[in-house]
Length: 510
Ligand code: NOJ
Ligand code: CA
Image 1 (cartoon, helix red, strand yellow):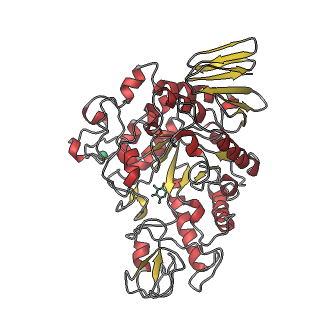
Image 2 (cartoon, rainbow, N blue to C red; image 1 turned 135 degrees about the vertical axis):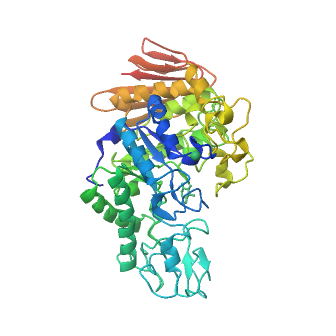
Image 3 (tube, protein in one colour; image 1 turned 90 degrees about the vertical axis):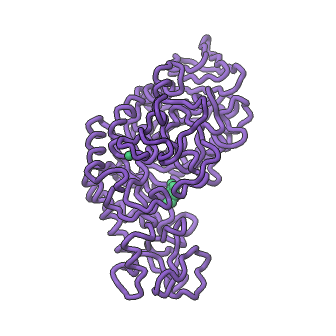
């Protein structure tokens, strides 16, 4: 675990912005940095005090910007580096923090480093990427680009075919072309990526969400020893130069990522994490049908907490740009129940733009910029009932992705005006979280009941709060003492019994 622990994470609530689809201020049909600046007050009003912006760097956009062509240049379609600096400054004025998306594992095939490394003559970038020794050779099960230049070798891929893997070495070296983690090529790559981090941190960025952090070093063991070793080297650089930088990993295994010096990890995505059980399976736990399963999730969560000794933050996102919208499986009041959970758990919550109004997963869209089935979760933000729902004044046919056209689609303006809306509930939940220390990032959680209703207890030395969430259609009764400090739905507490109505969430200070 790193020495660095940014204090602001103790009470952080993040808002993830997919810049393409958030707010377009120059009518070209695509969101921009000025658009983010203009909505900072909105984000603050919702209660979020930190943002994560998906990659906004120069790119050919084969993977929505996760294929970086220039790490130090804002993509012109979003604005300029000066605009990004203004995002930092304007956020700081509002007491908010900004994380950028760092993509250390790969570049675009159009990155000048890769173009140099494709050359047959040895140069500074020959070892910047992972290459085999010859074109005609076994690539050991790795996906590669083969015969793309006169360099005699295959370039190992990290994700899509346009994303060659940067070279941080191999934990287990099994072939002559597989370099060691401390060899000069991998070391130079690390310094280059640290230089990128330094560039933005100096400008005012507060840290990074790190793309595919667990897969930088190749051929790792199952404990990810090599990647932990690598990130600790990066951590040493941060300790020395930017001790306040906040780091959240796309790793999915906090017991490992926190050892690598990350402060936060999204534990609950991907295989075997049971995150899907709650929100994104046929019978999600938060559905009013009441046929879901919370138990496996709780067991898994407890294991992670035990393995991390309660250090670092396990972050549960409402969604993100890679997975289905929350509203694909949950509707109406069920979304409120899901948010009552998301916003009463430890770790820093991450709200994906538009989830606060229950934006739909839009079915049947044509893929945009490598989105494929993810495109339906990346549609433009719905601000009001005007042209393009207030996202842009461009001709609708020129929008980055077409708007959701469902007649009952939600928008911010209407929900802000309606006290019973999801937006207002999310806002109340964030407020109560920020005001009560037992609900913040670091207080511990115990799962007291994992059937229906869900009963969990948050506690720290100053305070204890029992959270009861009953997504089902039937009233439930729970034995508990204390005072109700928040309720969504109908809850009555008398004589040590709380009657929790159908579709109700209630927080009781003990
Ligand atoms: C994870 C990102 O979240 C995803 O959008 C991207 O396609 C891959 N990493 C590759 O960078
Ligand atoms: Ca624009």
